[in-house]
Image (cartoon, rainbow, N blue to C red):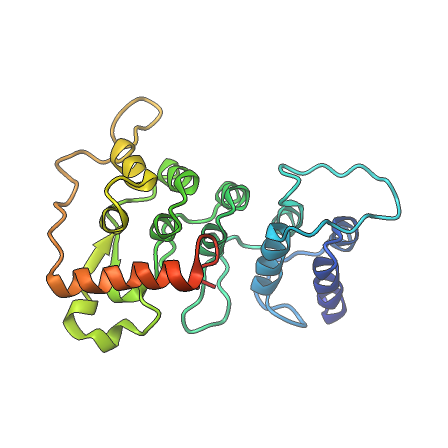
Length: 251
């Protein structure tokens, strides 16, 4: 796409005009290029997702051509992905937010399913916080189930300091102590829906009924140190106070 095409795509996305977006992309535009003239493709993917998630109505087209999408609330993202945009694309930031992480942070299951279906990695290496932990912080049981079904590892750990709104490096050793989704769920509440979901679906089965993570391979969850427990409690409190469900800082 040229710089003009890029500006047209941005305008159509801002207007939430799926017909106009489809017309522009139908010119044979290939969005597999990460940095086309005029901008960065990650901006197109992220803007499409945010606009699809927004509650405002889509622009009504002047014509009445029937357009069909997998979900009526993901049409912009669907069109961008159909134009070969990479669902695993990263914005040019020092600590980039992955597209799957953004979808989970928004609490939008339709977008999560669309990205996974397009090949989004459930464990993106660039993610500062795994998507499953974001879903647990959201107490989003549906996306927890979706990610577990896509083989998200509930034992995958991250430095506890990464969950804070402050750089974890300031917290010395305690901030570097690993914590996984199971521990985050348990720290929120032993009776919350996400904790029950993680316990009930902790060992998913493949299509022939064979456990993909055997109990022998599951690492034993060590008890967090007192300092790490304090940091985790502070992270959860800050998250609930300043972000609230589906309004996370991951983005």
